[in-house]
Structure formats: C-alpha cells, structure tokens
Image (cartoon, rainbow, N blue to C red; front, top):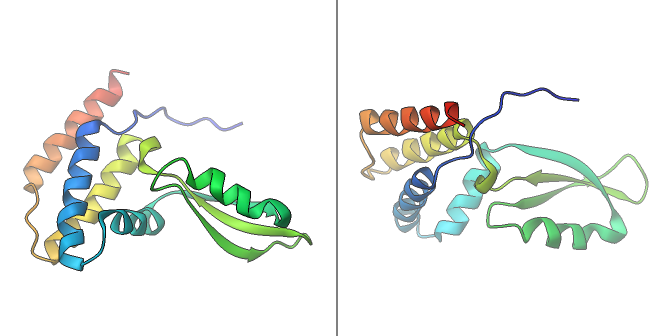
Length: 139
C-alpha cells in the first residue's frame, strides 16, 4: 500500500508547449521530434524495473510501447532468475502529473536555451506552472 499526494495530469497547454519546443530543438539537432522526446523521457522520467519471461519478452515490448511514443522498454539484461530478463519500463508524458511535466519542460527549456532557441520567459513559464498547480488544487 502506498499513499501519495494526488496530482493533476499535465494540461494540454503544457503538452503543446513541450512539443513546440521539441520541434524547434529537433530541427537544430537534425533529428525527429519523436527521437528528441524519447531521449528526454529516458533521461528525465520515471520508470520501473520489471522482470519479464524470456519467451514473452518481445510481446511485452510490443504491448508496452504500443501505448504511445514515450512508452519505452529498455532491456537491462538477464534477471537473477533463469529464463527471465530485466526491463526498464518508461512511462509516456500522457500520464505525467503537473510536477513531472514541469520538470520535463524545464529540462527541454534549458537545452533549448543552450542551443540559442527562443523559449517563453521565466516569468511566462512560472505563470503556466502556477496555473497548472491551481488546476491541480481544484481537482
């Protein structure tokens, strides 16, 4: 049993802003927005490690990754149990709460700035975050 503070899922505004930034950054890096997004998910996001039976591994990957672009399975290696493989399972941002989405956007903004890509001002971003937190409290 785990008791956690309930958080609101990220807003569509935050998702739209994220993808706008990813599009700009992707052009600068010469890769697709999806590749850029997947990089950030695996670099900054939550995951859990799960052993999967070797004979079902490919099916597990297909099922997990069919949920969306950010739903990623990374095979770590053999489990201590014979016939099993440990996998790192990343969640896509579609299930992020406002705190998780805010962190993801902050990382993308930081990298955009380092590449000379214009972003919202810190004040504008903070206003978005306050609006996200306010929406979270009214849920």
